[in-house]
Length: 242
Image (cartoon, rainbow, N blue to C red):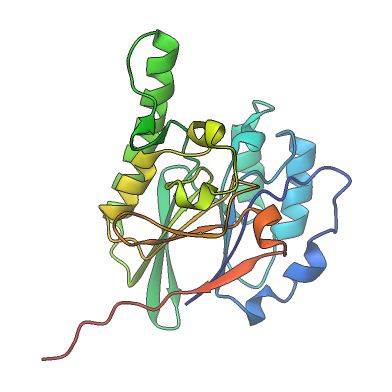
């Protein structure tokens, strides 16, 4: 299966038509397109209209999560509704199953949140604000876990905005790792038989990484992949015949 992915396009009202020419023929290279959040600059409906114009009506299914920029204008519900009205599937704790070439692809998505990684992470201790920060991250990771666990597909993909591992953050200042991802997302991915994990958010990180359990992770933030999308091939695991 050919999975195209892009994140952090940060489209403003002046960006209409910027990506569309490169997307028109995505069906020649991929079977599905995943959007890893931060689709807008400031989370406004006018910017979301531009996103819809760029990504709607493509020759492949388009699945998305939102990012922190898409939440900035406090219009995330309206943005989600607008994109869905244009045929773009927005996931926030949900999953989708697609049939591709006689096999099934399952994608579970959620924005995710920060908190940091094993040995250097925040804990739900102290002030209510800190406890709420960590609890929010844990809650979203738990929702991702449950959504992935419900999938019974040949190939399973996790789609988030925040990173599930520190490996794809190399190049970012270590001081901001806790604001770029959380280890709980990686635990959810490792516990549920995922074949590929895709995220954005880390503009100065690196593209490739792997979870402690061996799942491939790809950072598809546009400043990293430097193209309209990257394509990853995932083959269903085959059970040897007796």
